[in-house]
Each structure stands twice: as structure tokens, then as C-alpha cells.
Amino acid sequence: MDARSLGRMAVLDADGSSVELGSLWRDRPAVIVWMRHFGCVYCVEQAREFSKARPRIEAAGARLALIGNGGVKHLAAFKAAEAPDVTVLTDPALRTYNTIGARSGIWSTLGPRTWGAGLRAFRSGARQSRVKGHPFQQGGVMVVLPDNHIAFTHLSRSAGDHPTVESVLAALPATAVRTAAS
Image (cartoon, rainbow, N blue to C red; front, side, top):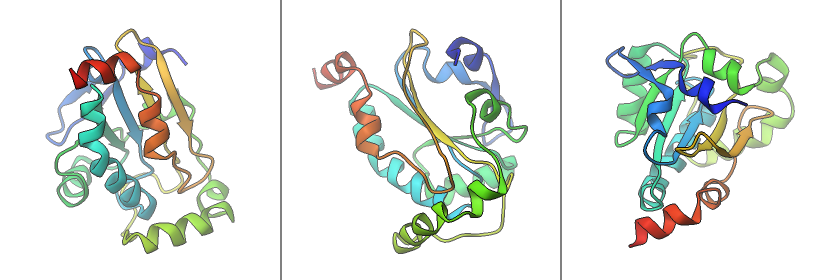
């Protein structure tokens, strides 16, 4: 994966304005979470987990951004409900998803691997709403450093396949953690 090429790609913010993805990691590490879509029960669960960890991510010197693939109006509603203090963007054309190699398919969305994750998400209080984006798109998580080095990658094999916040935090460089603590 070439982070420079990925960084030149544009996504949209809540106003519908274009945001160059590389601007997220230009001056500090970025934790980027690609979600399935804005109505997804697994994405609500994941957004809540990472939103709760945002202070720890920022204390480690990094920036957090969530990316969905629904429309701008779906982004705004999702941000208000699930991640009000987090940068939330959208890629309705799925270009960044394709570039990172995110999976897409009915089997990875509805297959047996998703059943336990669905129960876990439901128990966490997350609820499915109507589909607000591509229904079969899977997501992923990356930590990208200012030198365009990708320090962590997790591509979801199925809906609800998320890395732990702890594993993502562990991928942040020790120098960023020391700098944030100083």
C-alpha cells in the first residue's frame, strides 16, 4: 500500500467539502477507521469505542478520523449521534476503500463470522438502522505516520471484525507517546 497515493485521494466532510486524506497525517500520526456504512450496527459499536478512546489517541500525539461511505446527510446525522467530537468523513464513491483493499461482498456481510459480532454489538447497545451507504462494504483501520509510513493495518474479514483500540494504540510510535506526555 502506498500511503502517498492514498493521501492524495479526497473524501468529503460534513459540509460536502473535499478533504485530502493525507492532510490527516501530514503533521502527526493519524488513526483512520473505515466503517461499513452509517447505518451499520457494527459501525455504531466501533465508532463509540474509538470515540471513547479519542482522548487517549490524542494524548499519544495522534488524530482520529472515521470514514463512512454514505451521503453527506448520513455523515452529519451519524456524527451528531455517535461521534460528535471526532472527525467524520465520507467516501461515497468507495475510492479509498478500494485503495486500501477493503473487502466487499454478501458473504463477508451476512456469513457465520458476523453472527457473534452482531450479538456483541447488540449487547453493547448498538442498533442497526437502515443502510446508509454500500450494504456489503467492509472496513478497516490504519495508523499512518507523517512520513507516509503505515504503522498498522487491519482490514475487516467480515462485518464486525474490528481490531481492539489497545492494538491500535500500541501501533502509535513511542516518540509520539513521549512527546504527548512531555
